[in-house]
Image (cartoon, rainbow, N blue to C red; front, side, top):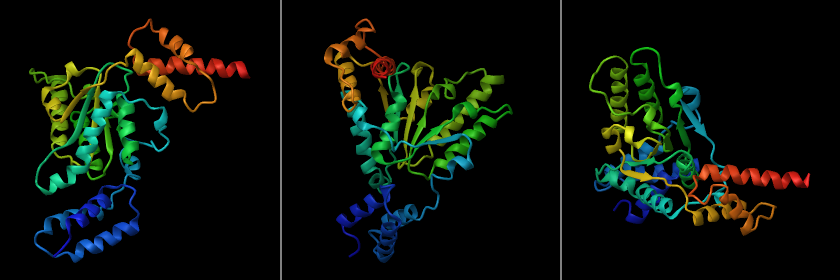
Length: 301
């Protein structure tokens, strides 16, 4: 009879969970190899391929200097504030993550890719870290500043090498400040413009080859500068906005709820009033709050 739908679901969970023990993976491989039915052939072959992958995240940094793997295991979720807008986005990404393997088996290509845009300091990169923490995936950060090479074509080769190394690794791949390498292509086709056009084409080609088990998050402060073909490669476009006054209050309460200091609602409003009652970018609010916490602690010394 082969694997039942429930057993297939268990296998999917084992394959997708990056923290599955090797002993469980070995047992799953034995079960998959026992199934010789025609109806499960494609499913079993795909699952076996994923389970047998020897390529791990640990050696990526030593292999490629343009890749940064950040440890997000100490992310303090209780202090992180998600607006309703970002909660809805997280729910969508999580939904696609759970169905992506089944969609691959049905030969339906849907990339779990998100393009975050909005002004600096609104928490775009932090949202990427939050995703990696929640899903138990490595947070892989591309060092774009080191990608640019002085030789003709070197930048494109560097970008291609990064994608080649991470392509088979389940992770959250963060393309921060993507506008520095994916600006709208110039039609002159000469000099520096020709080189940047080549870079954009390389990114397009690499995005077309990524696997849906990888979550790609791109971030930009200059959505207006991005090449239209790059924008189309991302399944979701989401603007990360400043927090409203009430959201700012909720964010501060989240941040300080477990701290051994007392900051009442009046003090919270004083921190917010530093910005003249305007909507506040998250990073500025956290900086002001941190300064206030430092003042309180200094008085105790």
